[in-house]
Amino acid sequence: MHRTTAAGSFAGPYTGPSAGTSVAPSAGQSGTPRRMRRLSRAILCCLLLGMSPALPVLAADMSADPVQPASGMGTIPSIAPATEGEYDMRRAVEAALRDNQGVVAARAGRDAAEEGRKSARGAFGPAVSTTYGYDRLNEKPRSMSRELDDDTYTWTVGVSQPLFTGLRLLSTYQKAALETERQALTLDKSRLDLVVQVQEAFLAYLKSGENVRSARDALSRLREQAKVTRAFYDVGLRPRLDVLQAEVDVTNAESLLITAENNHATQRARLNTLLTLPVGSDTDYVGTLVPVGFDMSLEQCLERAYRNRPDVRIAGKAVEIAGKDVRIADSGLYPQVSANFNWATEGDRPEASGSSLSPTGFSQWSTGLKAEWSVFEWGRTWYSGQQARQVETQVRAEEANLHHEVAYEVQSRLLTLTDSSKRIAVATKGLVQAEEAYRVAVARYQAQVGTNTDVLDAQAKLTEAEAALTGAKAEYLDALSKLWAAMGELKPSLTDG
Image 1 (cartoon, rainbow, N blue to C red):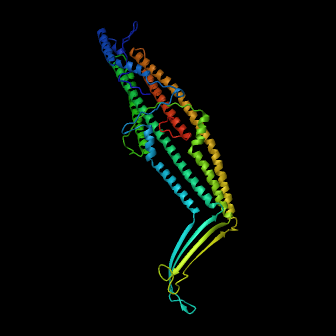
Image 2 (spheres, one colour):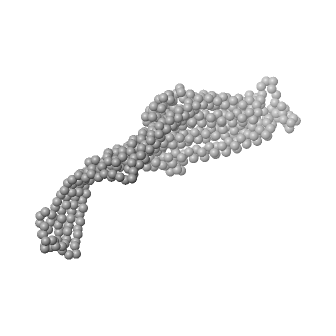
Image 3 (cartoon, rainbow, N blue to C red):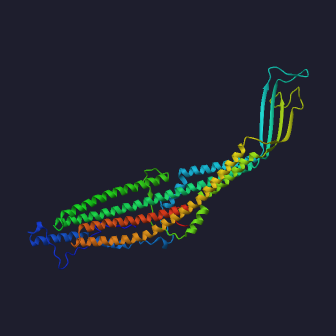
């Protein structure tokens, strides 16, 4: 919740002591003439009147930007539209999905699996091979008292078509197709994980920005209180202890502001890294911590999660792939049958088309069927099949366990969301009360009926209330981001649209 508090916002019109109220002079001022006391009071009144216009600002600001519980909200976008050079949450997510190297690597893995599927598909067709050779003998051979050629060029062509492989080729192709689908789902999962990282970093950046603003407001209030305390001390109405306490609190507030600003810069560097921007660039990330409504039941969330989550679908593909591995291992128990065609020609010239000694009959062809069966290998094929079956049992168990883990994750995210929604309502009420308490403490201090400690305590509680509301809003949006991810849905701006 953003509230702008002007300098001196704690101060109100000083009307002096009420009727019947006397302000006792300090011990060191007992001998001061009455005219000097009147003059000092007049000077103090002028000082306070110069700071008084800021109270209406604080009072008006208390009613601004009301926060409703998340259960009663509509789907209101939480991010302001981005202009050139700015990144709202949606634009930051889209930039990360486009440029992040983790997504690029997952995309390359998917493309590689697709090429593997095409390679496995090629095994169904005939394999064509050819050879070309040249031989030269140290002397011409003789046959039937006739000299033969000592230079021989040979060219052969062979075609082999597998006919039955025990379903090995079909299972291998189906496994490659499933692997392609699994890698595509892995890409989806990496994109979803990246979205969660970007949104988490973006919300942390917005939260740290609110903490910086709150720290600056607290420092401004403490500095103004220190000025008032100094003014009271200068006219003898307050002891020096009040001045020292106010100055110590100012110093502590300055230290907290430095820490908050450093954390804000760190969160910007994290966002720059996720978006593959220069880590030190002063990127302008814009947005506000405005909760977005969510009204799905647990059953609806679980149904979406089981249908959409990439890791659930990856587990299903793993079970199917394990089944194909079983069939591939069992294919060795069956004979391997193929058809063959071979053609060869030879001659004494590079074209291998006969010679003067053999002008005809220099080429020949043949065709046939071939069956090969490994009958006994000491159980190697059998045990390979058993191993594949055990792996299939393993991945089935892992898939069942994943379903339980998904149910737990969705339930826990939904409970966190509900808890954060309730805490927003409580923190909003607490902030209103803390602001009123601070206003009353300042007014009592100026009327000389309250202490400086009361003001400082009220200021500390006001800062704590602001931090509690900011934390509740950030936690709500973070829980919503992780709930969408737990359901396997990519929501760049956290809205269901």
